[in-house]
Amino acid sequence: MSGKQRVDGQEAYLLHAYPYSETSLILDVFARDYGRLALLARGARRPRSALRGVLIGFQPLELGWFGAGEVKTLAKAEWLGGVPLLQGRCLMLGYYLNELLLKLLPREDAHPVLFGAYAQALDALAKGANDGASDAPELRRFEKTLLKELGYGLTLDEEVNDGSPVEAEREYLYLVERGPVLANGREGVALIRGKTLLDLATDDYSDPRTLVESKMLMRQLFNHYLGGQMLQSRRVFVELQEL
Figure 1 (cartoon, rainbow, N blue to C red):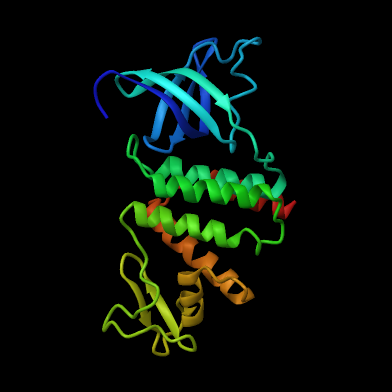
Figure 2: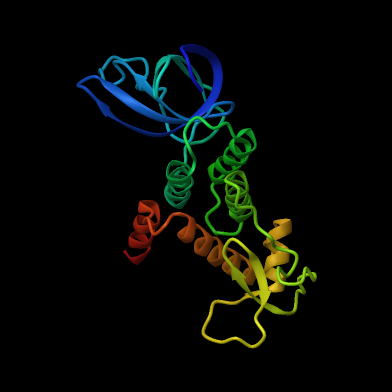
């Protein structure tokens, strides 16, 4: 994106905000048709600013902005409503989604499919799922979509060495940036059932073991693509569970 421009009526979500000068904020937002970008919200920190009650995380917003350069200037912001506020465990999962976008998604690169997956995941979390199973399909779907949009699409239904179909009753080793290979009796490594891989491909999480193994696989993949960066949301979530 280059040159001076003005954008109006763009659906977006606020990912992060931090202070700029005494009265303003820099916003990191995820917009449907413009991807992740930075916006300067002038005066947003003033006590009587109309933006104070509008710039809410995990809520659909309609934004307008103008300007050139890396940081544009926010011109308008409206809360679209219709989504309950995230709470408890679901709030921490929302922060997890935001961290993945902030750390992995390049700026000003449009991803409308990923935007839709993010919105669906937030909707699932907003419905208050607390058992880990109800929100799993949307979380895993978001993670898979993010990887695909970044160019790291997953191979889940065929063995990468010879292209043979993955068999539900066999065990596999998942090679990052390649895909599943038959375990062939290997020990001391993290193995995954063929059934889990096939369930993950179709977003079927009715099997409790699939829930556990698919989560572990996604953690392995994102640890790799994050290059060792620690997710603060994951750290806080673990600490809260320990308490």
